[in-house]
Image (spheres, rainbow, N blue to C red):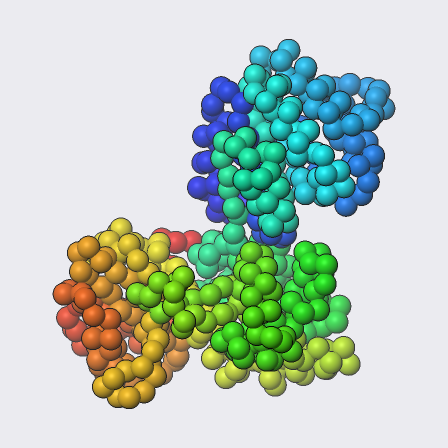
Length: 473
C-alpha cells in the first residue's frame, strides 16, 4: 500500500510534464521509501530503471547493460558496456531517435560512483553534450546522503548545477504513519509512532493481528527480531568505524543532552572532538540540536541534543541497555517488566510533544488555529518568579503580528485541568514581545478535553488525541 508523499509525487510529475531534459536528485536514508516513491511515480511511464550494487564497476556495467537491453527490447546478452561513457553514449543515441519521453532512474548512484570515481564527471559530460539535447528525465537516487550532498549536489562536484530539482525524503509524520497503520486506534497509532517512527519499512513489519506489546517484543526484544539490530546495522553500513558513533547515540538515547556530558559518557576526549561525530549523526538524520524558542541557533549556548527519529530514541532508551538480557533469551520478560508500564508512558509522553508540534504544522493556516504561525519551537530555562527551571512544550508565533500560542502536552489519563491551565498561563511572560497570547492544551483522552472545554477559558484551544486525527487519516 502506497501512502502519503503527495508533495513529492507532485514535484516529480511537474518535472515529467516538461519537454526538455530534467534531472531530479532524490536522497534519503535507507528504508525511508525512496524506491516505493519511484515505483509509484514511474508505474505509468516508460522507465529504464537501474539499481547499482556494492560490487565492481564491471559487474555494475554488466547489470546496467541487461537493464538497457530489456528496456529497448534488445536480445539479452547482445552486448555489455565496457565503460560508463559507452553506456551513456548508447542511451543518448537511442533517446535522440525517440520522440516519446522516457524516464531514466539510477538508484543507489553512490555505490556505482564509489566503485568508479570518474562516474560523476563522465555523467556530467554526457549531460552537457548529449542528454541536454534530449527530452529524457533522469533521477539520481541515493541512500548515502553525505555522498549525494558532496559528490552530486556539492559545489565541487562535476555534477554541480546539472540538477533541475532535488528532493530529500524524510520519514512519515505521525499522521501518514497512522494511514499505514489503519488497523490501529489513535492511541495505539501514537504509541507505534513513538516506538517505530515514520520509516515505512519498519512500519511494514507490524502485524495487525498482534497487540502493540506483542509486536514490540517480537521485533525488538528477540534476538531473532527483524529490527532488533537495525540501528547498529545502519551505522555499520553508513560509517567506517561505527563504535564511537554508537557510544554517542547510547549517551544521547539515555537522556544525556549537553555536549560535555555526552562526550564524558561516550569516552571522547577532549570534548571538542565530539563535534565531528555529532555533525555526522546530524547529517544522517539520527541526532538533532534544539535551542530554546527565540534564540539564534548559531549563537545559543543552550542547545540540547536528542535523537531525531523516534525509532532510534526508543531503541537506545530501552533496547540497547538490555541487549545482554535479550541475547540470553530474557527479552520478553525484560520488555514486560522494564518497558511496558510507567516507563513507556513517560517515554510516549515525551514523544507526544513532537506529535502535537506536527499537528500545529498541519493545522496552521486553517480555522483550527487562531492565527497563521510562521515560527515554531519549544522553550526551557529559568523562571525568575519561581526561581526554578521550567519549560513550555510547544510554541507557535507570528512575530510581525505579535501573536503567540503557548501549548502544554499531557499524555495522561488523569489530570488536574485547572492547575495545568493556570501553570501554562503563568509562563506567558517568559516569552516577551507578544501583545496577543493564546494557549493550547493537548490531552490524551476525549474526557479530559471535555472537562477542559467546560471551563470556557478565554483564548484556550483544547485538543485531544482523537481531535488531532480528524480529517488527517
